[in-house]
Image 1 (cartoon, rainbow, N blue to C red):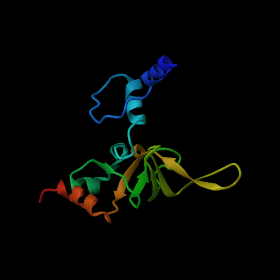
Image 2 (cartoon, helix red, strand yellow):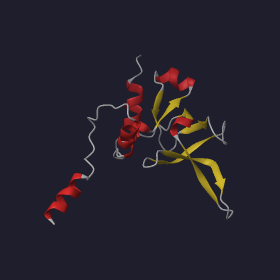
Image 3 (cartoon, rainbow, N blue to C red):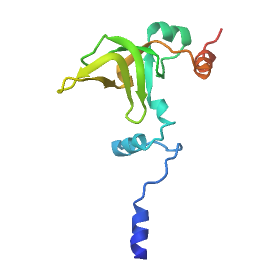
Image 4 (cartoon, rainbow, N blue to C red):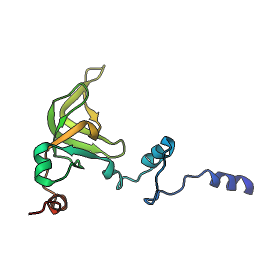
Length: 140
């Protein structure tokens, strides 16, 4: 009995560490991304800024947030614009108003979109921390 418990502990997942180095192995990269805690996944939820915003804030990308206006660049809804209704960090997906798919039963559901497939046109500036982070990089 005691031997079985030790064997089970051997296979238990190690606790996540931000000090993960790097690996060329795709399996380890996927393992790292899949085991990220939700507070660290915000770094994976970046989207490119439009040319106007890029010139204004001197940044190429920024984490997306509910209320941002985005334009879809890839997929069946290419060139469509809308506001972000919901951000799912667990699955790394955005849900944009007006971007819906029709199910077989006839009901409509918001279609999930990956942040790499959108560009931010307008930022939601209601959060003071987010505003300071953006304007901290702009040199006057």
